[in-house]
Image (cartoon, rainbow, N blue to C red):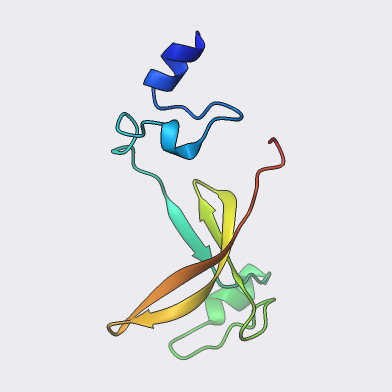
Length: 100
């Protein structure tokens, strides 16, 4: 694909400025965004015993950054915030891909 065709398709070109990229062609593509507070491992028998009010201990401490994934790929870290009685996240660090 020629460089001009790539630019017209809205794909970033290595070394190009973000301002030069037209994202209109991909702006409507849905992506899955996940914010992971922490993880744990437990046997199924223990999982089945969990009920309302059960506490599951995670591998992170209070105040530690959470991982933000887009389509199962780590893209950022952030903090949990409360916005109008809803839980949200604020990105504090963008993770650069190792492929760059």
